[in-house]
Length: 182
Image (tube, rainbow, N blue to C red; front, top):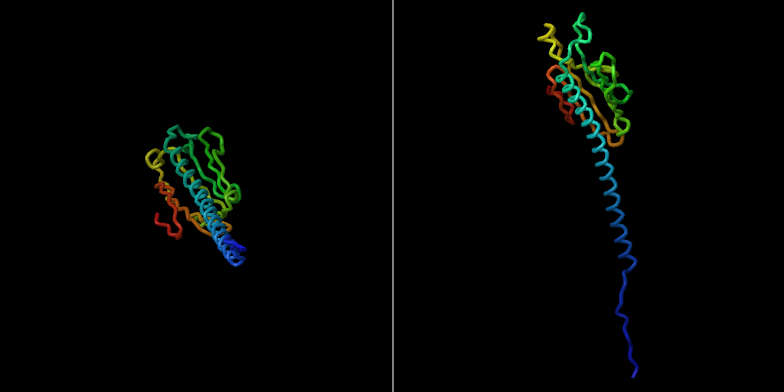
């Protein structure tokens, strides 16, 4: 008697393999897009956080510096300032606390694929200044509350974060809708 053996091993059909490859391809595409968006958001948040952190650090330096004025005859105290637009797409924190203008830190937004635009006050360059002590009480001078609004835009995703600063009262906040509630 002759025995017939049936082959019970079965593999995947070509259609099943093609469907699996298509699903993997779709998932990889979606994952890559999400990764790029997350990376862009991270870069934009890093740029905004660096700017806000340096503004608050500058305010703290000015608040803690209780030295006498650089030029007592002119009643000019030490001051710290953030020069927006130096370098062209960034800023530099500067000080004259030693009597000489010194750059304390520099940040370039180009490194994070971010473009900076100064909305208020109008102009490519703006200087945000904090004095070492309160001019109102020391010299009977009043400082104007200058408001700044800086728009940071990611070059790839065009996501936007606004940084709003009220120089006299020291408020700094960020938002994504452009409102300046200061």
